[in-house]
Length: 302
Image 1 (cartoon, rainbow, N blue to C red):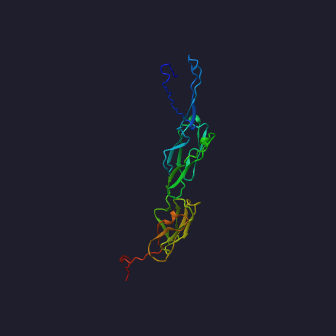
Image 2 (image 1 turned 135 degrees about the vertical axis):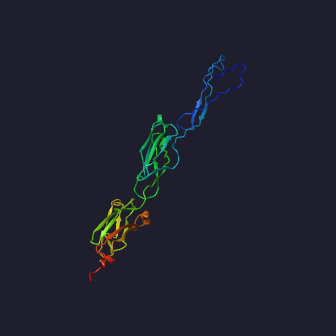
Image 3 (image 1 turned 60 degrees about the vertical axis):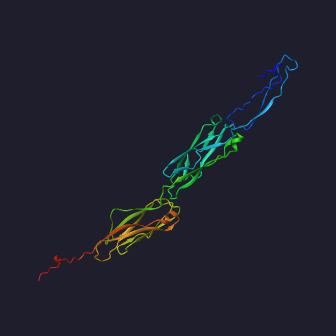
């Protein structure tokens, strides 16, 4: 209350008005300071109703959505995860729902499809976990986004907010190449015995890949295929190459030769266009008897 007497009636008295912080994103609010009717023994002042004073309380809680930490997150095709938090900047007047999705479901997934904030729990952080996915392609490290869709809320201040998307990168673990599967000793014979080895790609190509197959000595060994074709649908299915021994009718002993599986002659995938050739060493076992001219075999009876 303010008390004025005959001795201080002409001295100004002040009332300090302090703004109160609420958690609501309610904008700048107008309110009034009301002075109640005067009580006095002086009938000239008694029951006078003073004017109210208007004030504006400047809001410091604008509606918004905060993501932290604000950086590019890293996942990997080996399953490495990352996590970020989401929180509202002010209390909404109604439930706020934020849709969450991955821009590339072949590179990264999220553990939730939406975040729901109730007015009574508006300031509690909610988390989204990202998990890297293996696409089995040698596609290098791939950037993708976690998309936060526009807020859905009956609160008009929040329904117009579209939170920022979150950037991520998925580290690739696939390397273009191929694997040859054969035994420790690969052999054919001049009697036509054959041997088999398999070829399979190490990573999924983005298009058709044809690998050349050749023999270093067709007089010793022949191959069943001059090339092997792999597609994105069958890249991980091993294909067989049969090597058949050839009789050269020479007593030349066992002869080593190479089967080359090599550079892509057709490649719909940049990663596979740079492959180096690999060799399978084969021995062709001779069938002709060898003539030995040592002295122990050259004696004749006279």
